[in-house]
Image: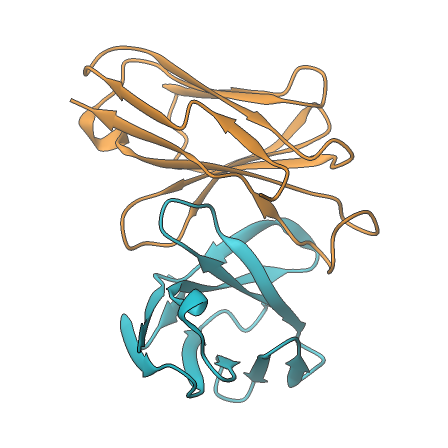
Length: 113
Length: 119
């Protein structure tokens, strides 16, 4: 079936370095993508989103890149901080069925001091 | 704190018992979602309400599961005759499609979840 998935289950990064978390999707009809951060014991927290008519969107210390040709999504976190330690999920959605997010399995980001 | 609350935060029950969880969404949000999440996995969609109307139910939602949102505000999720496979985190989220507190198209604000353990 069609799915959203992540390449790496765990990513370990030195504090201060940049982090890149990748995600592959297979549903070509998806036109809206979201990155969520989930800290231990908490619900997912929205980070940034991007629509399929864009290939890049920037937020505060975060950038999402969308490559529709290869159905690839990435999240870049600049100057990684200890508070960035969490599991990161990408999720997809179709804007004409905007109630249901389809989620990948998650990447755990570990920050080394 | 996103403004979405869930109770209880933890529930331990014996197999065969019924359990009920409550979600209080952000007050002006008209959409409410229930998800189930197991360890290391992304949330799986269960069901969705727009105001008091339940518009979509996943195939995961067996006949032992029922959800309500009687006045279009809080929602309850009930699991009857619980099984060990029901052990998971149950997440509630709410959204408002345009404007409001949502920063984007369909930002869903999640509660802290209710962790269910079925013995």
